[in-house]
Amino acid sequence: MASKAISDFYRRHRQELLYGVSLALLLFVLRWLELRFLIIDHLIEIYVGAIALMFTGLGIWLAHKLTAPRAETRIVEREVYVTAGEEFILNEPERLRLGISQRELEVLQLVAEGLSNQQIAERLFVSLNTVKTHSSRIFEKLEVRNRTQAVERARRLGLIG
Amino acid sequence: MASKAISDFYRRHRQELLYGVSLALLLFVLRWLELRFLIIDHLIEIYVGAIALMFTGLGIWLAHKLTAPRAETRIVEREVYVTAGEEFILNEPERLRLGISQRELEVLQLVAEGLSNQQIAERLFVSLNTVKTHSSRIFEKLEVRNRTQAVERARRLGLIG
DNA sequence: CAAAAAATCACCTGAAAGTATGACTGTAAA
DNA sequence: TTTACAGTCATACTTTCAGGTGATTTTTTG
Image (tube, rainbow over all chains, first blue to last red; front, side, top):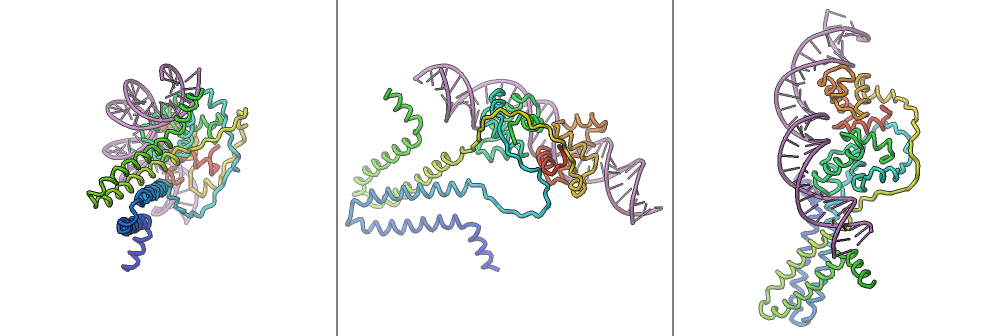
């Protein structure tokens, strides 16, 4: 029972544990170096440089781990009838004609996927308000008054797949 | 000429430059600290800790800058309007499998056209509440939580054109 | 560099959508 | 006749969407 809980805990917090352990290890190395220190004095610069580099790397790795979409694989058995996926080609001239920006197009695509503004905000790392502004502009430019119409319109115009 | 190139270079690589400068600054501080060092000996642990923290943050920031905004919208120029209206054939078995009634399908179609519930109600000569009930049932059956998703889903399943 | 365009965010309001529940009616099958 | 289901409608409540306005920051461009 308990061991299961522990292994479960480990699995869930592996990253944090690793991080902690590496920090501890680092401090140990530091300690060791501190002794050496008395002898080789100039080591510190290299040492600190190494630390800096190491932690920059760690930061990058961490950021990556934290922001990367946690792709859970959920298997759902179900028959799905798919209408043969044609390639989508953006109607660029139309986009330009309507003056729709890249970012707006991105938002539009996510709207078309049925995401809520909140979800879009999370996906694009921006605030809810920003998404609202974008979508409002899109509605203006497409001359529609809600997202469903926008999607319908954009599809016809070849702006989204 | 040259100055323009330089300022241009600056603009493009501001981040990297900033990073470099901060590193240089850090090394300077290090130098300074090294002098102090002879006096206050225990400072180093705190110092290294600070460095570590700082650069972890820097790493996170860097990773974010580098990976986040890459949202990629591919642009292919070509003058193809259209999507010649193919005939739509209802995927009847799918409709039956999901237990979607005729009336619900009707509502779904109007939803897909971008009509509001109120408009649908007027179109079908029923009350707003009825439309809401229908659409709620549709959402249940399609296992979605809003109309945009419903449309997206229904399109894939061949329930609407 | 300065101007323009794009992207970002905030606050506020009203409208629409969505949830939950219950109820009433025909119609068709068990 | 009872059961089941589709369709209809209602009330009350919460959440989300959308419009309007204004402002700052970042990027692109002339």
